Image 1 (cartoon, helix red, strand yellow):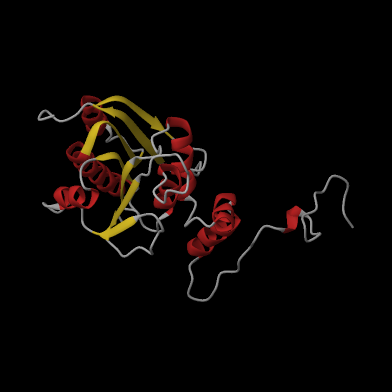
Image 2: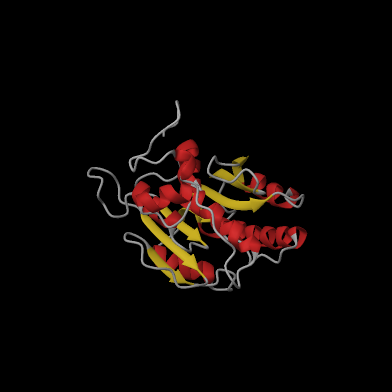
Length: 242
């Protein structure tokens, strides 16, 4: 019997019964079971499945763009560490790379990752280590020029040691900043995931030297217990040669 005030979903079952609980399967550690249980019950994961996005990370870039407006029609975007493709999906919609928004400029979305990524309609995706010496030039060739936005959701494989993981991800962010400085148009935007941990001073100094505005932000879709934050740097000042 339904208790007073208990909400009913379309199947007629009370919402308190909807939470998925898993038993620890043979060969699967408790930590893995808890992670999977959290994924299955995560509203952003469920929403991504309903709306056809490749994971909850799509909502992070969506929320950042809702606030700072850098993915506009006609924009050329480079997505570093693009797997599994959620950021590319959002970028395709917003920069109009498929030309579906009549009367709006048509943008470009270029995804780069070390691993193969399933095709995203409206995006061009390449397997590339952007740390390679010739990576900048390859990206420029694929773009046919400079970029307006460089985004990085890259993260190293977790070692389980927070200090070591923080240093490794900050090294990737620093490399992405150098990459952005080399390929961005003046006025361009850089967005990257970082981990809180006390090694951000050099990164922020570099960004503030090269961009007019630098913001640290944690979007609503980022889990509260996660140490991740995002840096949004707007108004690229341009290279000396410019």
